[in-house]
Image 1: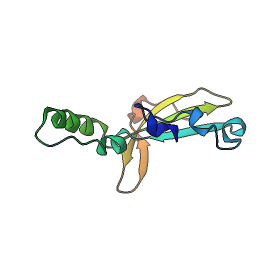
Image 2: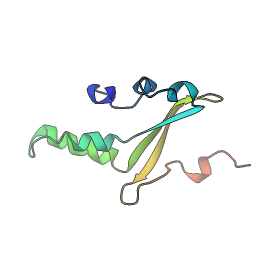
Image 3: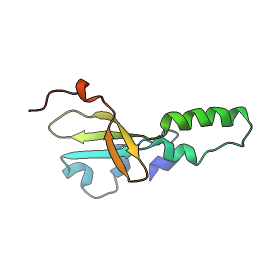
Length: 104
């Protein structure tokens, strides 16, 4: 779990290196990253300037997640921003429906 030793906690394909043939054989590898999860564990002491900055970061990260497409054999890789509802563990689109490509 190399991710715990990095400043940027976003998972990468190299984190799967010791997971058998997943990285090699998979057609698609998608990671989920929630900044809020990691920020929660770094709360500074209340009443400090750091705590005020932390609260602003928590507000920005609350209800957000990233789907990181680390591998896609027949398509592009990249990151998709998602809404996240922790109470029901549900991910949904952040994009406005009228800005999405037409569905076939």
